[in-house]
Image 1: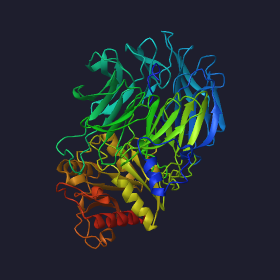
Image 2 (image 1 turned 120 degrees about the vertical axis):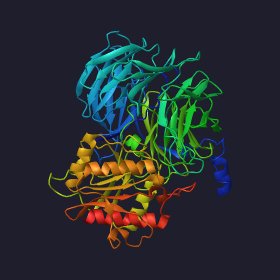
Image 3 (image 1 turned 45 degrees about the vertical axis):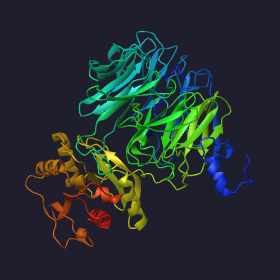
Length: 629
């Protein structure tokens, strides 16, 4: 079960004709900041009526992989129901809150939908078939209209009286604490653990997930506006200007009054703050918006959408478009393929789109307009007039798998689905990993399909941004193997580990797997899986850490140089490869020099890596060999 959920919810309290023109002039006008209305840029696919009493931002999930995405929304029927519709707007189920207004924008966890109700002061957990799992009643009897956030073992919900509750996934209360705000929380996960971030009258705070104890608070006299956003900003990768000396810092971005602040997620230290033209009205969205390989942050107010460099706070562009109902990001060039972080849910409401290499399209709702902005330039590509005022942030996905993105939003008392037909949206059939039947316990790996499963770990497990996408595209173009995209970040503790026979591990730092993870990896490899590991930028820290890991995995079978005439080396020069062989089968191959950066645009600043042609050829050989074993 895979999910996508847009967390970018504003604070509930805030919220032509060109036939005579040449083609070149038409494009110039269309891409200008003052682009005229162009209703042909968005085609309405379907419309579903809502009560109009409340209009929460919808969420997108994938309850039935292979059948397209589903949309979940509150305010259905008489306003007391959550509903799910399929990619074509057809009803799947209605969940009745029993006379309580279904007011909270839903959050989709790994196997349930979570929402809240106003008059019934309830948090609801809903099965993906629409049946009730549990409901929990807040003792304060205050409204639960803010969206919840979900972590691995709890739902965090804040009521209108400003109390934050942590409810276990079994529906039992774990703890509560005063929050002096009713703005939705966000979940932060870094090397210090998984905790909760809140934006309150007292400031921005980090609270322990295991009891609510405050770790730090950054205070300011300005008022909180929207849910904070969270992302690891400093990527230790070989890009021009990248800081290789520092580890990735998980940063917290919070809109407060007429300013945006960026804090160190671990310490609460203020890293930068910038003034805004007006009070922010949307939660920040984070991604490589302009396509330079570094992350940016974008947010909207009543008259503009502004983009800043996430590392420095430098303003990149400003577009004259209302974004006070919300903003969303999407990769419009790749036929609706979606970054893993969205596909599997951002139920923690972090606002982080993921490591997809931009530029990205920026979709903004405000007033009666849906505006599409070019993330690379800040130019308005299309401005679409809605039937009524937009009252939700947009959510974006290729719902039906036809290769075009759809935008879902609430306009007036209706849930609308609009297809993006503006220039620049590439129409390519979406390649989503098919549902793989788990292999029997003693069988080999699934054959003839490459699903690149990238192991997540405590170091910077994803340093190459979107270079893996270029590698997968190259493999697919060669036609030698069926390739599922995008890649799959995979925790070794995942119950779905056995579904992925080809594993990939990289980074600059020691992976630092714990004993349980090592045991699961060893078992998986012994049962037929294959691991390819490479040291990004020939990092000494990763090299030392991986060699320790290899010794723990197979203490009786050390790493050894891969023989010179091995098929994996065919057509490749300069590769330094080592392997572990069990029963005449390579279970892992390791490169102490970089391949990943060379899959894409290459490395800067003297990084030790293979030439691009050799790196790509080596990956083809690895895949061919692993799948043929």
